Amino acid sequence: MEVRIVTTLLFMITTTYYPRVQSDKLSFDTYHNYDDLTKFVKKITEEYSNITSLYSIGKSVQGRELWVVKITSVIDLLTVPNIKIVGNIHGNEPIGRELIIHLIEYLLKESVKNSTIQSLLQTTVIHLFPSMNPDGFEMSRPKTCIHDHRTNSVGNRGNARMADLNRDFPDIFYYKERSYQPETKAVVNWLKSVPFVMSLSLHGGSLVANYPYDSSSNSTQYKMKKLNETLQLNNFDLLFSKLSSIDPSVNDNVFYESLTPDDDVFRYLASAYANAHPTMHKGYGCKESVEFKGGITNGAAWYETSGSMQDYNYEMHDCVEITLELSCCKYPPASDIITYWYENLEPLLLWTKQVQRGIKGIVMDRQTGAPISNAKLMILGRDKTFNTTENGEYWKVLLPGPYKLHVDARGYESKTIHLKVPGSMDPHKVDKPLTLNIMLEPYQPEPSTVRNTNLYYVVSRGHSELTDVLRLTNPKMEHSTVNIYELGSDISDFGEDDYTDDVEPQSVLSSAGSASITLSSLILALWCYASLL
Image (cartoon, rainbow, N blue to C red; front, side, top):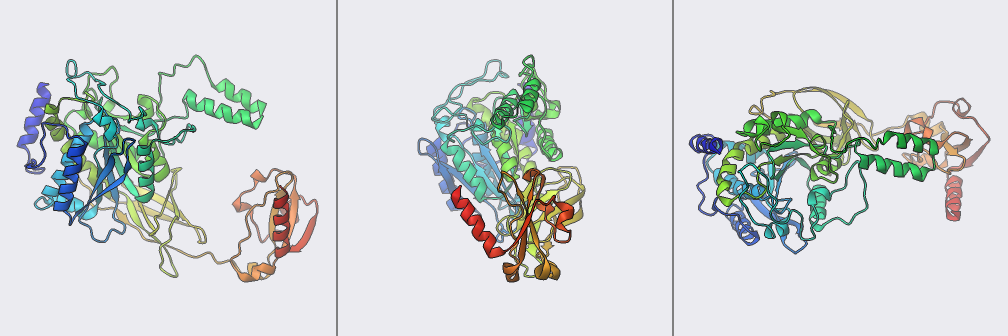
């Protein structure tokens, strides 16, 4: 307790870089309920309408709006990164909720006089979502923790239907039929509509920065899922192999790391936050039986769970999200809010700056200059693709160093680019991302392909599948001759790269017969066959 008091006093004294909030609207000695929150966000966004907007991403089970405040001073938003901070996913963990409410006020008041905040708002779009679970919050109440460092669980962790929202997202390792909660659906649709680059999820009950994955392919749950898939294949050799991999003597309370392809970035962001926090980096802030080296942990290494929001953010939308446990008490007394504010203000601001690391740009058609949407990009060596927006934009948080960027888009020649991300590993020294606009050449078939080429299709016995759908890139192909060959091997042995236009068919396929027909006849035959299925 003495350490926290001293820490608070130091933060109050050293406010030249991050001035203390002189609040005439919000109080630090109370938790703000839904009505208070609604009145506040409506009033302050009206007052600062030049740089803010208020919107709702949906409603809770009990009909409460899921309010988000968007803050930026940028006029032209093209290639400007979006970040978000989400609080109160668990109803009885409201410290994050209060921090976000006060952060809204802080950023707006400081935007007129603080050069650091002005620079942040001129380069970033910030979405602040104080309460993902307003129903759960209204059903909870604070309680003093025993011996100060013990967690408590007073109130409702889940939403109004008692569902844990941080177990409710689609999981990459463990698929389960479920009816998703309205709050979860709202976040899923939100992620589809805004191309978020980075995100924070604020929790309580411990003191650590947690990074993906939370779920793991090593879990018994995941292995049972794969076993069920094997049973459906009727492959008994594979079935016995799967069964032998499930050791009933294994203690499921022993967990192992489950790492993402961007593990270096996640560890860096988690460490940057923990090191900026006065006590988190020590790794034992809550006197738990487990210590967190450097104040960070991989989610699955701490304890495995499926359906977490941070895993879904990263896997489905390439949004780099980490989960912050900010208070040993899940719902500490309101008198402690001011302490948590001063402990986390600098780390929060430092984290927002890290979105300017890495690369960004627009993928365009070289001939027309038009943006290419849904182009797929990948950092070679990292098994994770990310897509361009409808405006052709892309972002990727990367640490300084050399990389190879591969770009692919339908109808265009693929491209691999060698690049070097500049900068320092010091989280306080972040300049701006490497801007790399990429021009792709439209795919142009060779002239001989249009005039003379026979397009070869592989039909597998018993599958009735065609590989490589006709590339109708030129009207002259409408009357091209097509050779069809039956092949004894399985169709899965052939992919898109098996299409060939310069090799004799006998040298590639074991011919069991062929027929030469026109394209129009082929399409008619396929349609007739499909109608019989």
